[in-house]
Image (cartoon, rainbow, N blue to C red):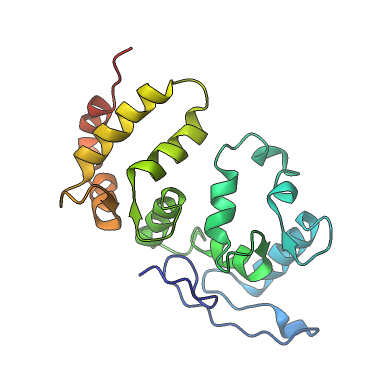
Length: 193
């Protein structure tokens, strides 16, 4: 399900790539995007690529005002960055965005993207430490480490159905698809202050 192949889009979608550099055909064909949309994405990519290196760094993403305050920007870049270069090239940019294309009605791909935000080491599981780190990015100094650890421990206990001490994608999906039980999750995540 989660391969690190450079030719695999996060979410398991296989793009049909037509890459003939230096020609009009050098844009990849990705399901969910028309040729015109690909051209617009390429223009947007080049605007973000401030140093013209062919890839976008976190610093370059921060030039977008809407992203400046996003505490998870680094994690999003890490998830898009399938070759682990530390930056996002055009193919990674398009493949990452393809998971959210309006035509694509693939909730598992969207869920997997969200899951990968938490799965920092890309092993297919969310560990206690990974959950703590990502939640710490989100809450900043609004909770003490002790309060945050209580939330993490309760969350792992609640979601970890096979008692291996970590959250698998299937366990994560159960939480999200059983939205009617969200109040239960909220109650277990309550911290005594």
